[in-house]
Amino acid sequence: MSYIVFFTLLLLITLLGVYVVIENNRKKAREAEKKIFNNRLKEITTHFKQRTAEYVDAKILRPKYAPKINAIVGNFFVVQAHTEANLTQLEVVSELFTRTVGTELGKCRVTGNTELLAEQLQYFVAELPSNGIAYNKDFYYEILPALITLIKTPDVPMNLEIDEEPLEDNAQSDNELDEQTKQQMLDARQRLTTS
Image (cartoon, rainbow, N blue to C red; front, side, top):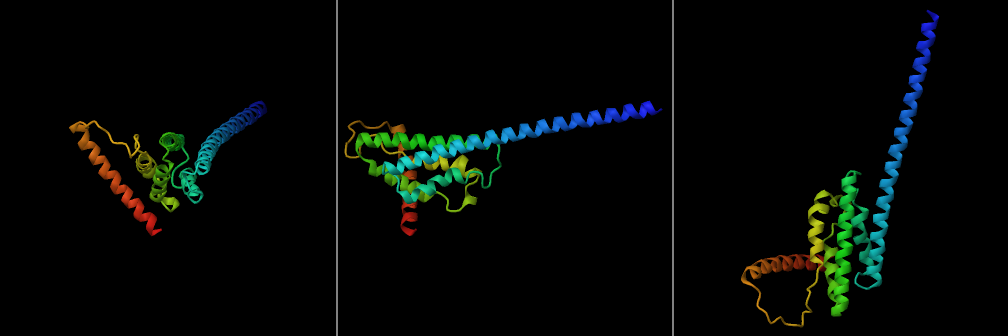
């Protein structure tokens, strides 16, 4: 009888030891995942802020607007969960912004009209939310990509005229896009003048 009690206690102690080892391994795995997540977030944020500093140095972004631009990455997880899908969305949106501005900067250097890009970025900043709670899922998935498209400048310098007539199908859709862009620009200008 005493042998049965002894082996039962030994078995329970062994099971407890195995459980503790498994839980410690799970905890270490969760901490490693969290560390990888935080390192990736830090990398995205650092890259984005470096690009913003480059835009300030290139004189297409005023220094007072840099914190508002950096708020795009800084406020991402204010109202959103820390998930891999959300981190991927932050990476996509920040890369879209830096690629678009980089492309437009190259285009403006060729045309010699960096003031137009600076103005576009000023309107972009005016459209950004002023409080952190507004940086929500809808903003990052819908509003911000649409705002980034407003940064784009014309491919042809404004003082050159195009001899070709656009096709009628494309002319109507281009006019609709131009009207939407003009309305958004007017809204942004009004916000800039009131603030």
